[in-house]
Image (cartoon, rainbow, N blue to C red; front, side, top):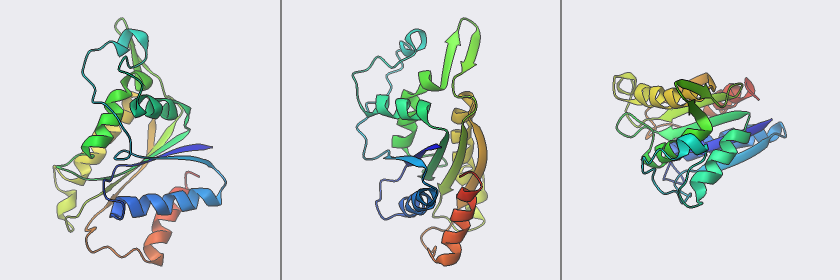
Amino acid sequence: MHYLLINGSPRKNGASSKISKIIKEELNKHNHIITEMNSYDLHVKACIGCLQCRPYKTCVLPEDDGHKFARELSMTDVVIIVTPTYWGNMTAKTRMLFERAVPTLEYIDGLKIKKMLKGKKAIIITCCSAPFPFYYLKNQANTAIHAIKNILTAGGIKVVKTAIIGNTNNIEFNAKFIQKISKMIKKIA
């Protein structure tokens, strides 16, 4: 199976990056194909809303990592998104990736919308520094999951697991925590 692991964190040693590393190590145990992309390492021009991608099925902006992301998304079997929660949403750079991949996710043909990625699966993990119960409140980590889920399901991707990792400033990445993340990944690996 081919996995696309998206790390949405700008911090190389933050909770999202550490969780992404745990996920990659678990997937490597099963000899899967893994493409890892950190949205902050990619050079992606923002979508300009020209809608030219709609009739042509590809973004018309000059070739950049937005195109690369869209190709990877179309080739993967399972997409795993790990992102910090910023203002109740995914990080801006992560959102930019999905905005540039609109024609990969869905195609509008007249009055019909075709979901382009049916049969693919996803896991969404959001990290939030707020302590319990605040990260469950409206406009926090749940809203980030909802935003990502809306994008993925628009493309026909089935979200099979979501998780909120809260209080990340005080989280211990001990054996018990690593086992919890590994168990979640094993269910889909």
